[in-house]
Length: 330
Image (tube, rainbow, N blue to C red; front, side):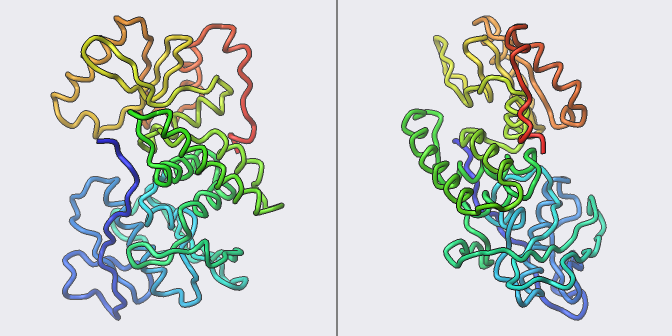
């Protein structure tokens, strides 16, 4: 089954003078607002996501002037992908706030300081919707705001997953899906243009232009951003490769160079049989003449090393002609 972004279930959040007795693990989110983010032994990524979702709900309860959640907060509620599991919480307010940034309580297990950001944005009612009972910017508007205001390596995850949620592409029907994807891209590009002289316009245009709706995880989006930011030729995402017995769908493929790049998350190898199956897949593709390189989250902490590994996959002529795309590095 192909994965698509879906809104997650929100943790219970209530206004209360103190920790509610009914909550098993109450966490203070804001002054007078508590949430139950679940068991203390949750995986780190899941605990961070649930805490962030609870903070979004708490902001809607406390900030009476808030019109909606925006940016990463809206992305979280929509179920879009984020590179950072505990982002700042953003709410759109109708007038310039006296205190735009408010540091939030740091509960046990939190990974980093987080701020409540009150943003004054022009947000027409058509750009606001309701998801899981919370007012949020629409999928398209969320992608636009993130493309303008976040670094490209962060916004690409949101933009690609928004395109995926809107167009619902299938790797088994690539041509038909591509038409839907391009229609969704044109809509987002028109929304970017409608923002006029807003700061970050060049970056927003660059991210939306290179984004693919065929990536299937935030790690794949980050890998896609990196190869395009290096100025390498555009890869085919989830391109079908056939052999006698089955189809393979590598994350990134350059068929003209017989090169594949795969992003591997831990979940992919939780079961021992998954590791064995992946080895068999790689052996088969290698026998078919493909060169394969695999990447993990930790690789993105050392971009110079990562750059060298990726460029080593390509002929010298390709490497020499590659020009970093400045707007994708900002």
